Amino acid sequence: MKITLTTKNDRETLSLAKSLGPYLEPGIQLLLDGDLAAGKTVFAKGVGAGLGIEENIKSPSYTLLCIYEGRLPFYHFDTYHLNGIDDFYDLGFDEYLDGDGVALIEWASVVRDGFPYGFIAVAMEKFPEDENRRRLTFTAVGAEHQRVLKEWQEHEHIGL
Ligand SMILES: Nc1ncnc2c1ncn2[C@@H]1O[C@H](COP(=O)(O)OP(=O)(O)OP(=O)(O)O)[C@@H](O)[C@H]1O
Ligand SMILES: [Mg+2]
Image (tube, rainbow, N blue to C red; front, side, top):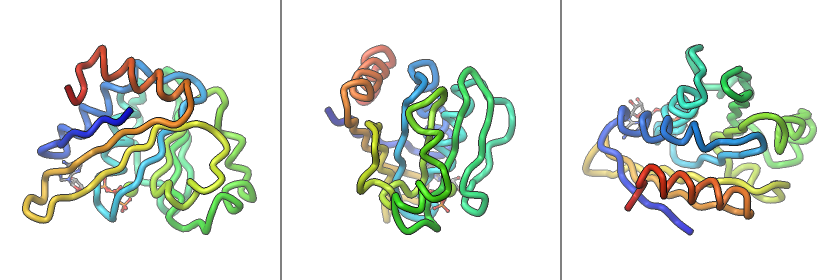
């Protein structure tokens, strides 16, 4: 299953991501990819809002991980500065996967090889001719993540 859609500005990306909030469950992983300024952090802010987090969600590009408390714990990673999944384990970050909260990883292609659990992948692409437009492609690996993606699509009429 694959969902492809475009957003026309950052507010649309924010509200799209926010609409995912109610469908997220403990142990859901969101793996985001896309070039610099593709909108990964904007998407993360939307997910955070959808989980009822009121704190300002900031890019974890230097801290690598930010933890927030909402309806569920929210673990926001940026793996740009890592070399692979082994670094992720060395930092003890696997402790936050498949657990009590929702994990979102920016630059997830870095840790995709050998990633130990299912996930929803979100690929974000810019359009050369329109600086405010983004194409988002959602796919899911694993039965649980496929079910969550499907429920979101069906109930919110996403990409239909
Ligand atoms: N449709 C859109 N969706 C998301 N962001 C958009 C869109 N159009 C324009 N933008 C702008 O693009 C920028 C995206 O920045 P953001 O920090 O979210 O990117 P990022 O992918 O997290 O970058 P980085 O690789 O540095 O982490 C913001 O300035 C945002 O306002
Ligand atoms: Mg970012």
